[in-house]
Length: 231
Image (tube, rainbow, N blue to C red):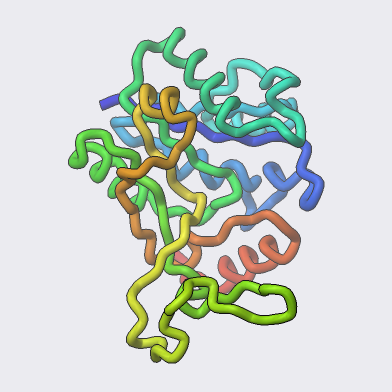
C-alpha cells in the first residue's frame, strides 16, 4: 500500500501569524506533523503544500518533500483546502504514480501519536479503503447543547436527555482535525474528506484533540507539553 501524507500549510494566518513555523517545545509547529509521519513503510513521501518560502525551507530541512510553492489562486483567505489537496495529489501521482490513499495531517494538530497513525492506516486497509477520520470525545455532549430561538433557549436536539446524568450519556465524538485518510478516487469524486461511510479513528489521548487556531490554543498546547511526562 502506498499512501501520500499531505500537509497543507499556508503562510497567511491572521489569528496567529507565523504559526506554522512558530517554535513549540523546541520545534517549529509544522515539524511535529512531519516527524509523526516519518518511517512508515506505507508512506514513501510527506508532501508539504505551502505558499510561503520560510515554511518551505523549514519543511525541507525536516525531511518533507516541497517541490514548489502553491499557486497564488490556491493560497488566498477564501481558497479551499480541498482544491489545494487535489492540486497536490494530481502533481504527486503524475510524478510518482498512483497512490492508494491520501493522508491529510493538519499542522495545527501537533500531538497526534504515531500509534494513532498506524491504527488509522490499518483501519483503512481492513475496511477496504473506506475513509478514516480522527475523532476525540466531544467537549460538550450534543444532548446537553442548546440553540437560541428568539429570546428562548431551546434544546438543540428536540426530545434530548437534558436530565440524563453525565455518566449515563452515550459516548459522543467530534472530528479533531488530526487525521483524514481517503482513497484518491473518492476524494476527487466526492470532493470531500468526509463520506456517509466513514470509519472512526478514536484518538483517546487528550493532547491529540488539540487544534491550534488561536493564541489561547497555543497556550493550551504549551500547558499540555509542560504537564506531559518526560520520555
